[in-house]
Length: 332
Image (cartoon, rainbow, N blue to C red):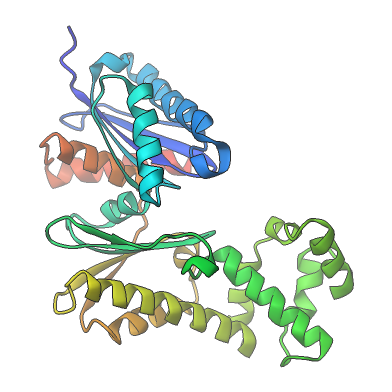
């Protein structure tokens, strides 16, 4: 009979599912990747297939079977609403059998990857935007993280859409000058703004997603383009207000709140145009925040949460070795 001495952390994203496996001492480690597992985009059946595939691939690396697994901690993209949690929990029970598991939105494993604190705020700003706050009792205050009309704001797709809006306004003479109008056509492999408009229109407004328009916005803002600067600053202040008000709702206004920032818009803010505005906006509502940039893979946070779930706190030296392993595996 197996002694069930292994735990697993899962980062279930839209394009890939990352899995880290470790024994209870953190000595034996494995890392694997399978396809995406956001049920909102690929369906719950395919999501479960990829979660299980990632687990099995990691087990093969250490020569063990699922019967050796003590616990699985999953941070899943798309685990936004109560009905998402119910659907995923039901299907995970069927997929994992008798293996105990814990399910959270993927924002919380990003939080755990950056701090050992068990409470605080997190903001994920990548393709989309999500944020949440956890109070000292463990209660989570979250947003729906759906579309703009349902209360959400921010993310790369939103920034790209606003940049295009401003570029076309400039092109048509209905808005102020912006270098976006000059740079966007070639950046998007077009000869003119007219061709760019046509390509976006006939693609059902998807063509622009092939290009990293947020990077262009950040570069032009650094070069002094006032419209690009305003787009970044406005997004930062909107997200900062959302965070600040949610922190107040969670009863943490007078605490020194750890605020973990994760996602490509934060990680690639090389010119420091975004994060300082976020911090200042939050501080309009909450006097003291400690901003932490999540630079470790979220799956590292998931593995640490899995160890905590079975009562294991490893020495700092061992945690550092696991962190290095995770970063190297993630970058490979």
